[in-house]
Length: 377
Image 1 (cartoon, rainbow, N blue to C red):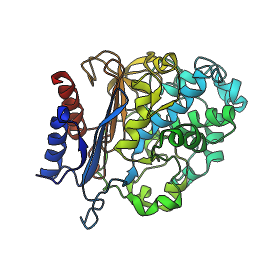
Image 2 (cartoon, helix red, strand yellow):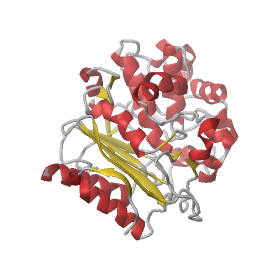
Image 3 (cartoon, helix red, strand yellow):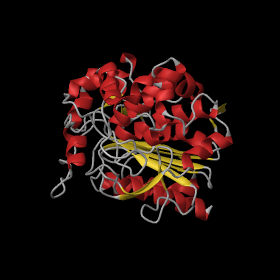
Image 4 (cartoon, rainbow, N blue to C red):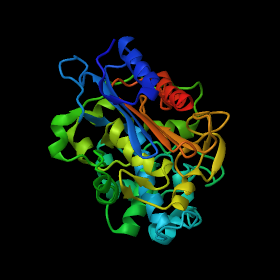
């Protein structure tokens, strides 16, 4: 059995066993798992190796690029500003970002950005991967272009663009970049080791992702799918580089571990407070569960229901036995589930990337065992 480090409440031994099984079967190389219940960190475990060659152990403080799990951190910044009355989630984006009104986008709402329904799932103008480090270029191009479908009518996963879109609204309203706002208003007060723009002092703790197989390409993909995923084409090894690590890429570039992900996101599942710090009100948390759009996503090709940024529990994607739950995950397998009824958040972060963008059996096995442990308590 894998040598599991950390602490685990006996009620959640099934989580520990599922985690060990992933490692024993060779599904994982190194990973971490955390569960926060009623504000208490009841599972905080890690194991395996931080590198594919298995020369460096995964430690308590190992962090890694978690890809789109970062979106939940950016969303929390916007939800906090909305809770303070500084952002109207159903207000026009152009109210905060006047240039955004160009090319027929004057009526696009902040909620459309949050729910991937703004029609801006990629860039119209050709860009290269290194352009993702240029905040002004990424945001100004999006502000200038026309939507690819009628905003608010359907979701089309804004895989990389969402971070720049929501992040620019956060910047315009708060006067700070999304990475700075997150560090000051969220990570700092919570003592959470998560970064949107990872500083040099963290470099010796950063594990590198093990790239996945190529993303499966559907037969006769739509123009929207092609443009979303090919401009620029993403190579997982780009996340190994220092420029990627330093840049604020708020939809895909955040670095953390399961403990930090669960601590931050438990602010939602636990009514606005985590680790002794209150981030937002109970009402402000509920906004995440407000359904925005439901149906087959134009980019992912899967049926999904979006709240404010988060995927919602549904018959198509049942991620909790309780109705009031939301989730998201990252390319290759990382995942966070927030259950408002159970007051529980479950996070899984790993280095071996699996296939696809919507998670896999490794993370879902851990989530299912967390709920089983809760039911048996």
